[in-house]
Image (cartoon, rainbow, N blue to C red; front, side):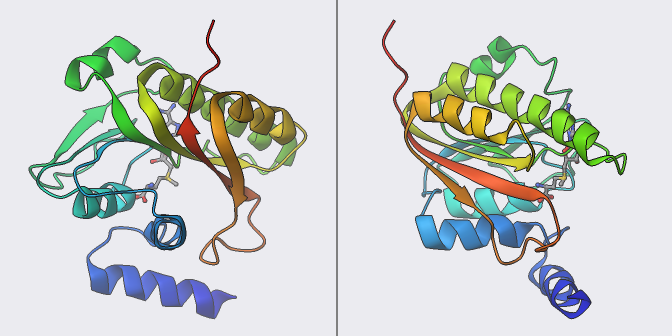
Length: 196
Ligand SMILES: C[S@@+](CC[C@H](N)C(=O)[O-])C[C@H]1O[C@@H](n2cnc3c(N)ncnc32)[C@H](O)[C@@H]1O
């Protein structure tokens, strides 16, 4: 397995990405086409910036990626705006001032792991819940939400919450995500919130 991880590490370095996590997004994008030229993308938990760079490449000069993390992501180009902020606290109005609506909300946020599987799971769910809240606030109708979450007892309830807001919700485990890792991704397409 180490061989596979070394392969992705070297590939990322060669292709100019700061982390191998880019291949989780790239693999999913190649299969399901979640990103398009001209898209406005909100990238939550963006540091060190691999997803940001990939999304910015696909979105192109007519698109925009807003990258948010506790740590500052280094400059990734003209179509990227970096925000150093805590996603659990950020006011959606601040993001709305940048763009009224986003086509895609990505979240690769992960808590600092403690080694206690249940604690790590609950913290990951808290981050995923917050990402879903921001997606609900900011996504354009029919928009896409792609979110990392650690497996555990609250995953089915989170998936059900996503199903209330999106026409299609699919669980994805990219090949480049280590099989022993508890992380999975939910790919939620076609945002269509129930009318109140
Ligand atoms: C796996 S890394 C993201 C890697 C990134 N997608 C890439 O490809 O380069 C997870 C990130 O989530 C961020 N994070 C965790 N909790 C956060 C929070 N409350 N607000 C903002 N970012 C957070 C961490 O700082 C960390 O950089």
